Amino acid sequence: MLHKMLWIEKAYQMEAEHAGKPRQVFVTQSHVLAKKVENLFQTYLASIVSCPTTSDKPKRFSELEDKHFPLFITVDQVRLFSSR
Image (tube, rainbow, N blue to C red; front, side):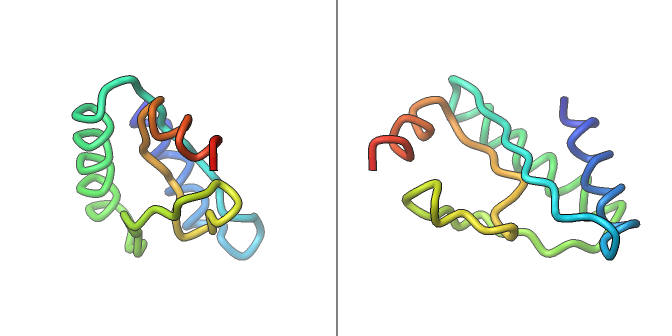
């Protein structure tokens, strides 16, 4: 899954002027896994493209912007997003 997300992000970087930013979301039950995958993604992405990413997450889905993607969250965080 991680490699597919990286491929999609890299493809966007190469064709940025022709396509909208992909909004990828990685959802897992484990907070630890979400953080590890996010850190690994950031490391890999930094090695293949120059792309500023952010780990600041808004409190509602409606506040998400392109800069927040790809998004790495847990199932519990999805529930929190949905309940606000």
